[in-house]
Image (tube, rainbow, N blue to C red):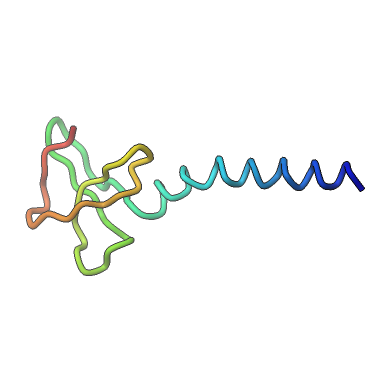
Length: 72
């Protein structure tokens, strides 16, 4: 029994560590990038389709009106 509990905790830890990287792929997708301009598509905010990916895991999509914005 104790072994199964350790295994469960181990698996939960892996899921928690991997989850943020999955969010990066799911919510904010960079479509084009050349020199200083980039286009990002925000799946998490349907009301604003274009934005820039920000945050540590690039999960936050910040809206802007123009399709092209300076990429840091």
